[in-house]
Image (cartoon, rainbow, N blue to C red; front, side):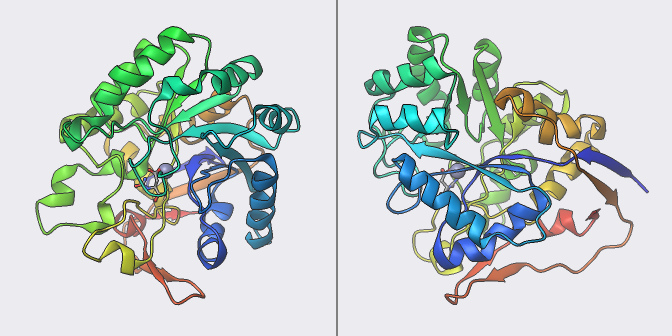
Length: 346
Ligand code: NCD
Ligand code: ZN
């Protein structure tokens, strides 16, 4: 039996939502992860320190008491609504861990986002001054650009000029999904990236070839097998610029299986098993701890965890829950049941 002990993981990109959905999903993250970089694209978006502190309190209030060492950290939603003095205070007080830029219209709840990265230079000066990371949803919203080329286009047209203008700014390319993204990170010493379980384990034929799969639809859209291979290579070779960010993003099945599926994959439940399976298939389990813990700790400057997890690959398949339900009567599909049926986490 294959078995490995890893440092207790961190999730550097997660959507916990609010209300009944928060109550239903937070336990999956709180029990499996230590640090959780909580995305601010709730409605209305988190743009002030007071909003961030109140949201963190709601998250901790709904987290289960048996969570091992759960530490939600908060990002503000990059918009003109951010007051720069408030931002400085939030960073100094440790309430604000990062700022997240969404191109307006690129993804779920991004309507309040920006139309140009370079328009936020003053805000980014505060980040550069304080060593705070700018988290970027790197996707062009130019309708003339093919959906599968939008990450590369954003990196070329928006992030490259910003990195050139502000080489000291610390940037995380969130949910990197292409070879172009991997190459961009390699070329920029202050740029790191999160990688999701689903972008590592699936490619666009899985999404589109055998019946269209709303449960695999997310932004950026899962790309080609070539792109998948580049992501897998970056993480399994232990490149320190790449860390786990699940981008777990629950949507009610009614919103996923309607005429216009919402983008987002809910993988907080089984994302770790999915990632372990990818590393195992590439004979790289020895690098798993770096990807799910060590690299992110170094990138975010936090201490290593005190706890560990053991992952064992079982020979017998298990029957696992495929959905969760919320107290509001919604259900959410759980990504990764197939991989999770082969692994046990203790
Ligand atoms: C995320 C969501 O649902 O909030 N969706 C997604 O497809 N990844 C937003 C995001 O991170 O793009
Ligand atoms: Zn996300």
